[in-house]
Structures are given as C-alpha cells and as structure tokens.
Length: 290
Image (tube, rainbow, N blue to C red):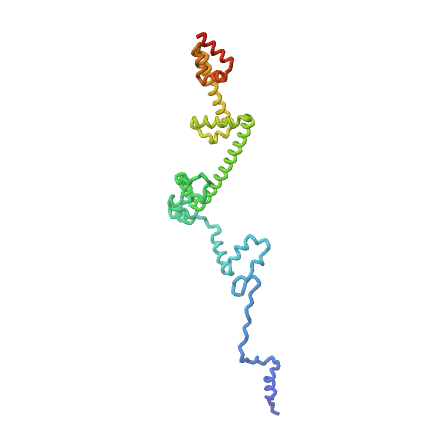
C-alpha cells in the first residue's frame, strides 16, 4: 500500500500559522518598527559617551574632583587624558639649572610668560593711596629681580597691588595716630592753661610764623613743643621788659623823669598817665634833684 502525502493538512498548517518546530517564520511585507534609543541613566551610553548626570553616581566624598571629571564627555576622552597624565608622572620638570642650555632656559621662560626685556614689565598698581605716586625708577630694581628669577608680570602686578593696599592701610593708621595725639594734646593744654588757652595758642602761632615754621606740621601735635614755644614767647617778653626797666633805673634826675613821662615802653609810664600819685611824686622829685 502506497504512502500518500496529505497536502491539504500541510496547507492548513501554513494557512493557520500553527506552531511547529520546523516551520519558518512568515515573511511580512511591512518593515519592522525601529525601537527608539532611550538615554542611559547609568554610567556610560552604548556609544561610549557618559550618561546624563553620571557624576551623581560617584561617592559622596567625590565633591573635590566632580567638577574636574564632569568636563570629560566620553570614555575615550577620559582615557586620553589619563594617558597623558601618566606620561607626565615621574618626568623631570624643565626648571633651568646651571647645566641648562640657553634654548632650555628660553623655553622655560616663555612657558611662564616671562618677558624678554625689563621694559616689558608693566606692574604699576591699579590704584594708589591718596598722596602717593608711582615711580618707574623706583620700580626698576624690582623688575630686575623679577626678570632674574623668572617671575611673570602677572605675579609682579599682584604683588604691586598688595603693596599699594599695605601702604594705604599704613597711611590710614598713621593718620589715625596723628589725630589721636592732636586731640590728646589739645585736651592737655586746655586743662593746663584754662582761659589763657586761646591767647597762648595765638602767641605760639605768631612765634612759629615769625621764625618760618609751619604751625600745622606734625611736630605741633606734641604738647611739649607747643608748651615750649609759649614759654619762649613769655621769656622774650619778660626779658624785653626787664631790659626796659634796667635802662630806666640807670637814668637819673631829669632824664629818668622825662622817660617816665614820655616813653610808652617805660613800665611806669602808664601809671603816670593814669595819675598814680606815687609815680607823680617820684617824677616831681627827680625833676627837683636834677
């Protein structure tokens, strides 16, 4: 008996798409839909770039180097940077020595930005305290030192700005000290002279002007200086009066009487003018005795 193949059964299997281990998948006339690529939320994307916010996966103690790592956008970028860093590890820095060639020294200076000549150093401060001026001749020795020791102009400019700030603070401190001393000196003299304070101050100013001294100078913040000038004026006045009295006393008779009556600098003249009876009697006696 011949075996026959039931083609209808085979056909029915193809028509219904029943499962069969030997059956090939049916071909479709429609193109397969592409699955959209989803952004990675992990460390690295399939193309080697780092995932969005990948640095957030770093340990909590990584804050010190997170910013540095975040500049790398892919694994190849980081690998290249690591390779370059490893190549520099242990490599001798090109700091010039006595054995360095002129070319090596020049390359080192160029890398630091050291100028070729002293004239290329421009490090005047951005601002100077009131009353201060910049002197290029004064700055030249500093430029020579900077050039000799390979100091870049930027570093010298920063130092000059710091120096100007220091000078400003120092001047402000000196001015505050001067103001304090002046206030204390005025208080001391006011207490000592009382109602004569204004008069004595005017005497000191006039005396200073007479000898060509600036009464507003720092020296007059010292009460001893002011007190000394006032005392000197008094001594001069007393000496002048004393010499006047001595001259009058050396006169005799009519000469002395006439000096009392006519010489305004004679210490007895004013009393005579005021009608002092004692002085009037003295004058009469001198005239009689010749």
